[in-house]
Image (cartoon, rainbow, N blue to C red; front, top):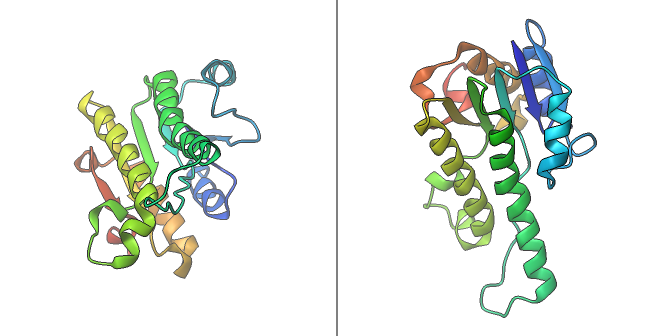
Length: 190
C-alpha cells in the first residue's frame, strides 16, 4: 500500500511512519519538500510518486489567541488569513490532487467536542475553528463515499510510542465505522 504522510517532521509523525513502513511504502511530505500554499507546485510534486492508497494529514493548525475586543490590525489579519489558508485550503488542495485514494486520515483534535473547560473557550477559539473546518473537510470527503476520519492523539505525551502504534493500527485496519468521525486514539488499544 502507498501512503502519503503529509506533515512528517515531528517525532510523533516519525514514530507513526516507522510503524506504517513495516509493511507499506510511506512517502514523507513536509514544508521542506512541499509548498503548501501553491496548488501547481503540489501537483508537480505528487506526479513524481505513485498514486496513494492512503493520505494522512498531520499539518499543524496554529490557533492564535485573539483579543476580539480591539480592532484587528492589517498585519494581524494577514497572519490569520495565512494560517487559515495553510490549515484549510491546503487540505482541500491535497484532497483534490489525491482524491483517487481510498482513505483519508486527519491527525486532529477533539477540542471541538468540549465546552466544560474554560481553557477551551475563547482563549482557543481560533484553534477550535481551524480544527472544526478540518473536520468539515473530513465529513465532506466521507460524503463522497471515501473512508475519511480524524484521529485525536491527545495525551500522547504520556506514551508517544504506544499512541503511534495505535494510530498505525487504526489506519491499517480501515475501519469503515470511523467514516466521518473523530475518534480518540487511546480508545482503541490500551
